[in-house]
Length: 338
Image 1 (spheres, rainbow, N blue to C red):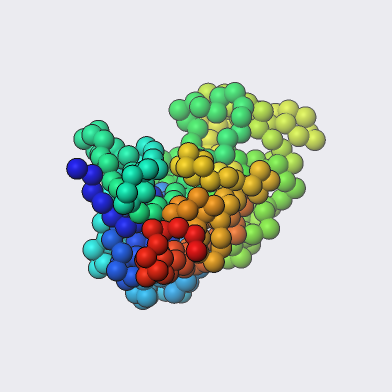
Image 2: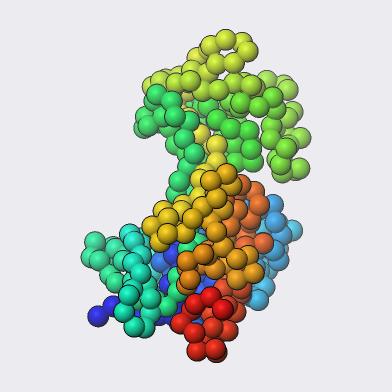
């Protein structure tokens, strides 16, 4: 028989965990699914990354996030969120992707979640309501050029050691691209940035920008501005711009050009997306979508603009969702609109 819970949460990132904690505090049962590990998005950050936000702004569940320095590191955050899962005894099903969610036409919980266990067995979970908190990192933007799927091309950067004494091209001009570039440079790679804009993006972390600017100015890091990648070859990247066309040697290519929201489950459930912004139709005061009982949490609320929602302003979505469900329960509703 399927498990039955009040709330099924898809995505075990910080905002998904916050929704599970809020549900628990409201007396609601929940289960949290993730196709990877807990806070897999953070786990995939560069190994030595430091957050822009303070630890206080990354905390959830009213549990202090205590670190020795002003800014927490990736390692600090992973330890903190693991501890929260244990502290609140959250029902997290790691490495169990959700393949689809069906609406249930019978009595009782209205949704059936179809997930796949690590043993490749289908598991069914009935839920009165669902939260989609799938984030961005599983759906990277693509260049759409020949050679993008070659084995030496990747959308994620972990650390620079593997590329010591190699020719590397980093595509992009935002924080992720700049931090990858600096780590590669420090690890001894011969790195060149390729960006379609005239310079770095405006939102570069203020403590990073002077260093990378100086390295580019002195020639330690190459930069091709107002340039676009037209093809990737086994040993070079072909770029075009005002200078015409040129080939940049590359034994590794990092395409750090952002991600698209993972909205597949929302679309399958019939939640409309704004064609211009990509924002799912929802009530910001409750995070409930136009499909009763289906909620969103985290960066999905930003649509195509991932820079609008972060952990610090998405962590409260779980409280809004739990309040909506608790109020509906008190009124004897079955998670329907008031």
